[in-house]
Length: 277
Length: 361
Image (tube, rainbow over all chains, first blue to last red; front, side, top):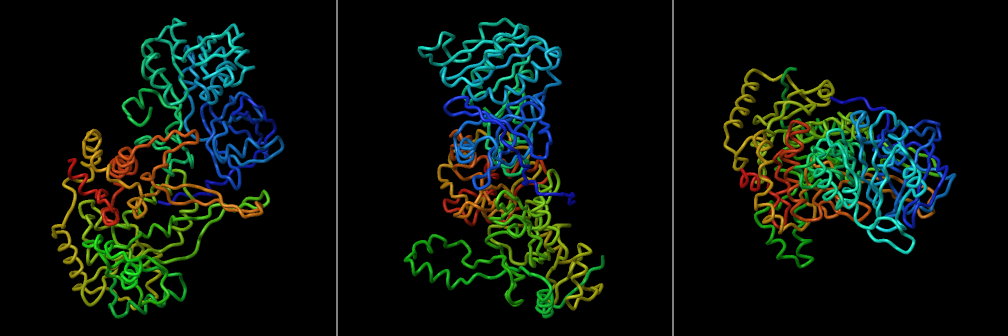
């Protein structure tokens, strides 16, 4: 009955902040390295628990692709205790990291297929791990289309990288902002206004959609109306994943544990579940 | 293993002998006099009226200082013995100047007087905490704790454990006591349990005593329960999914105070929160795991302010679905053992699984 357990599930590994980059007024990008030299060994779409002693833990999705070796990146919005404290930290500081946890994006299943990425606001953070993974293994994938939407130009994340994606010959990049300003010459409108800009072959297309709860309802409808089937629409859901181990109960979506069964789900898996989206 | 017996008059010395070597936890009767006095003192005569019909005598699991404090005939305790395996608050890590120390409790302990429904609950917790992602804090406590079960002689008026199939259990105890008149018949469940026999005047049961026990078991089986579910746990888990839109959810949940009493007293609730506590100099502190409950308003709240179960009706329905369906599907037994504790503590009287499930099915 009792399974052997060697150590506490709650013991984090020590990781050093090696770089901090301000992304927007509320988001910063942190680069970490485990002090023992180990790799995080994550799959795109997985998350970690960031541990600041005296503050607590917060679940944060990994933003870098596993094709980046030696370090990993977390982009963090300042919203609470732990994330607020992390924002005050600088390179050289040490934090605890538990994980990686959860089910990531189905990178093997989408191999050889066309992929439409739809990232809304901070949803780009987990999505970026997959976008860069696909771009780093470009020969393994078909057409790559990237949609990105932010509320305003000031809230655009990873601006240098957005520029690179835009300039790539082997990817199609479209972006929009909900409300423009004087500096903005691009598209204005919610992210769903980007869908009519592309023609796709739905038989060969996966749509990977990550954004705030409200965005899912509309973006999924758009993807469906493009003819993409429910099992080829992939989302990543946000919940309060306190333990990452399928126990604490906070992240439960009906019978599913977001931390273990997700955070990545196919739309076909969560379609009938009222609480999910 | 053979059936043992111990004379009722020898139980005290058995407990006393164990207490010399072990920390022994038993069921104590709460001082009801004080309870009434305190209510009077605060002028809460009305509140005493309000609890009329609910049991005035309370029992609790607590460390025994004297063997005579232990009750083997009691209705139900306020909190289940779960608190010895996952305490309301438990330090899981200590940190000091950048160093980390995991913390475990491996105190050798014996819990005396655990009822079958609470054993069934512990058997479920074992699945949750010892199978996938085994939790060393739980496991260390569990491995160092021996459980002496006792059959229910006086059921709580709120109990419906028979219909939850948890009024008898086959495992989860080291010793199990059943009242057969002058003596207790004692089943030995484990090697560790057998090791406890040396502390008391146990004898092999005679054929007649063994017969008495089987008769008592037969009688218990034949007894019609005062209340219970209309359907079996399997049918409940199967059918509940079709009842999501029933008006009962809205109707009952409107009265919910979101106080979390129902989940706090539940022997199978295992959700938790983790918080840090740090000293004033910010040099050392502890990471503490505490009980949490899905009926509390901010349980599904995330950092950005989104609350994924914002409304009472969502939280209320989640609790019943979790108990009656999700846990069954995941672990093969219901997340309800029929102890009736939630029904007895709910002020607006909406927590009773019998009432809700029977109205639905």
